[in-house]
Length: 607
Image (cartoon, rainbow, N blue to C red; front, side, top):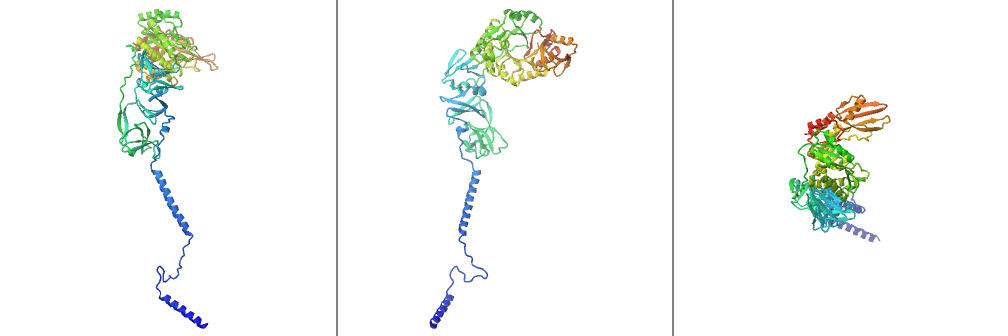
């Protein structure tokens, strides 16, 4: 047993000796540093480190994508149908000069058609659509153009003409006219594109600001690289510059040559240059006018019945320098074009013998309740019947002119009334008859009278420079203060050339009474009667610089009486304006209200 233990000890000693002689293994230290213990890796940290690595990689990718998305241009293409607000392949978007209209046209048989209202509003308001008779009209200087729905034929006066397309088409309640037909009488050019349907109409010609694409460039819906692309322009393509916005330093708003309005980056285009849009060969019709070589001195003669015509001898004897008289002879009596006439051949003959022209007045006042809403002007048949009746009277009685005094025109009948003036002017022009039209002092609510268009067709536009304070007013006031008169002249001259403008003065005054309850009434007085009122009440008239009139005021039995008087001095102040603004003449309402000395005042300014 002891021997076995000794042998085991000897073998152990030999093994230890052999280890001392063995060389160290690679990667292992033969010696450990004092105080350091060898660390062992924690297998639980490996998944965490992998997750952190993946998180950093993913975050980097997402950050890169965000930066790319933020700073790289969008490649999205805008839906052209949506951009032009088109609902189907028959609709056509309409661009006029630099704007896209809300109105839509129609594509029919390969041609562009526009709604007649679009034509009226934007291209040519001289076209007139009669919905009651399905007739489209255009007034030339001496001829009336007429076209019907569904036909390629139209008439100029009585001569038939034909186009190779249908001129007017109906789509439900909407009426569309071929743009080529409108172009026959209107100065514009246009270009049409398919897919989607849109047309660009230009009626403003001359120099335009343009820019040129320096390279292939995208025109976007809004100013920003993320906005959808409307269209792409090729290098060296030109675009019209629509506006410069200081806030859009990097973008310009443009109109492309293929009809898109959008934004292009400034770095992709050249600086602004000029390009000329050539005006097409188009001859505007000339609407000639009768213009007297003397200053008009007209006065209205109120004739209420046939017997009143006999007063012409006395009436003329009381005037001096009068060269035109306008008797109130013709009355609209129904909506079919019928008139009532008080014309008298002896009256006309006597005036001509005394060197005075006769312009018969046509009014809508006497039978205003019969001609409800003036439907007579909205229907072509009744309008033309009225024209024929008036021209027949003018020729029969050898009248020198006609004077239109339509005081109940409303916004609904205004277009028809204007068309009536056009149609009447054709017949007057053909027969050498002067056409004059009476108008209120311009105000915002009477803009529909369209004095500028009246001034094209009529020979003279007469301002009714009175009734500043009508007889039914709730407060007393002047009939025609000097400021009111001058404002009427200035406003009218904004629409009508001065050689066609006549200003009318009142020969009457209103005597106002305001009772203790505040109720206001008035009566119209001639000049002598007004002066007598002041004398009878022992009131001395005082000159009022503001109104340019003598003013009286008195109190009697609880009522206040007022009067702004028309007499020599106030009339002269108005005549100074006619001279100052170089108007065609003066008119006065009415004969019999004036005093004899007034004519000498008028002759100082009208001769």
